[in-house]
Image (cartoon, rainbow, N blue to C red; front, side, top):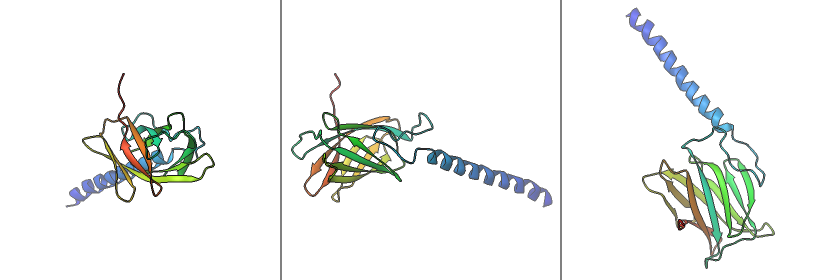
Length: 171
């Protein structure tokens, strides 16, 4: 019986240490992303290319489909937030977004007053899709091999942003 305990004890200890190492390594890696962002920074992952991250091109338009090219968008991910001015065509581009965290978007007019907002949850699935529920929460499904997604956020009455896939033609 002592022989089995002498073998099982070190194996359990080694397994426990590996588990702790894996958890602490993941936590340290996640925490290595910048805590504060300026309007020119992106939510870049510090760990290089990883399937847990994706790039987002987001277009913003009014309820009648006209691109919103004035004002900006405040993006919040975890405890970090940044403001991005809307470019021509009402678009912004974000790099290194985590598939593990949702994001909040707040559309602002040129005087930084809120026009609309939404929260977007990202998940992995067999298809790429984007939708908005009745409460105005967006849901984006990405395939595991998706590195970039194009979304359109339409400002609706009541101040919520409807999230949809932006289908573009390839020329």
